Amino acid sequence: MVLVSGSGTNLQALLDASADEAFGARVVAVGADRDGIEGLTRAERADVPTFVQKVGDHATREKWDEALTAQIAEFKPDLVVSAGFMKILGPRVLGSFSVVNTHPALLPAFQGAHAVREALSYGVRVTGCTVHLVDAGVDTGPVIAQEAVAVQDGDDEESLHERIKTVERRLLVEIVGRMARDGWTVSGRTVRLGRAASRS
Image (cartoon, rainbow, N blue to C red; front, side, top):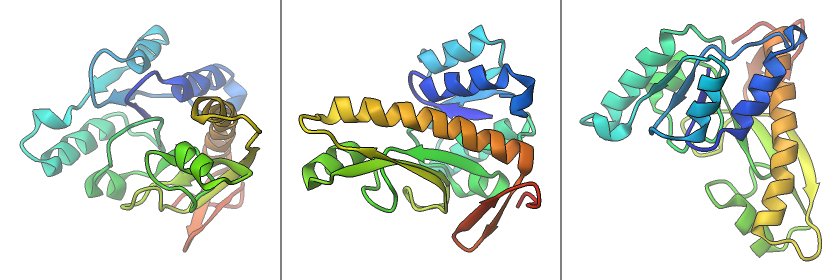
């Protein structure tokens, strides 16, 4: 199951990977928080079921959380991937499913929505991307994998972010495939992937 809010480039990477049976996972559905986005179009082109749950269609965030949880549950996913989903997931979703997210920085550095801009402003020479499990905080969940991306002279936010996204898509596909094929365990803040692991 993949949740999207925009163009769905990470979703497309997962759809492309899942076309190979050796990947070991398939996208069972795509959910969104708004209509008319390219992410939903990508899913429809791939004949993947879609749904939309808008926060504004519910009286409270709690009611939205309940509705989103119920809709995800209909597809019985082993894993939920937040792929550019621009809403904070609530306690019902997080209590019911394992959720993976990507972030364009080496967490815990530069959490939040402006990570690339803040990395440039701070003057770091290396940033990167993180694949992590989602918890109740903002980009605070246990890290699964990270990869560094060098900041080049003359980089602006757009150029740096594009290089990070290239790494991010590849790393997300790799990690989702390994989780699907080999399972995972979580001990405190340590996530371990491997055939000996059992899903938690």
